[in-house]
Figure 1 (cartoon, rainbow, N blue to C red):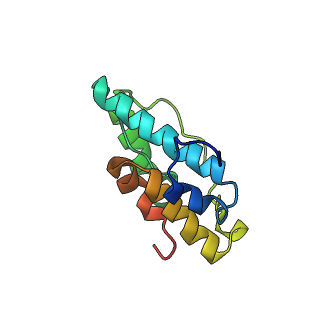
Figure 2: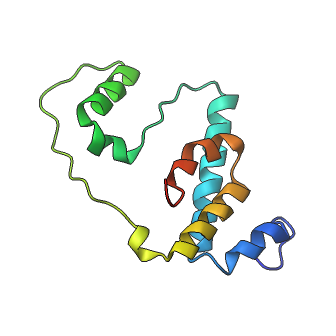
Length: 120
């Protein structure tokens, strides 16, 4: 990755400061491409955030079912909250990771993920 000309020097500069930088780069590129495909093929989509299950489970579930045009059948399995990974990174690593993600995100993807910036 250091020798490639496909990645700008600006983005490569973040790599040393971001643990598992290739995973964050890959995560962001996947979302960039997914949104591009949705737009080009005019595929309807529904944006869902993990934390919505914890803060408003029933409303989130109803939104998903409505989007999928499905009726609720039976009782939903209980949602077990608590997945958080901020403790694995220092504050500086979190900030730098978000700077990397912002640098490689399309504006559409950044609008979806910027909510995870530290202090949000």
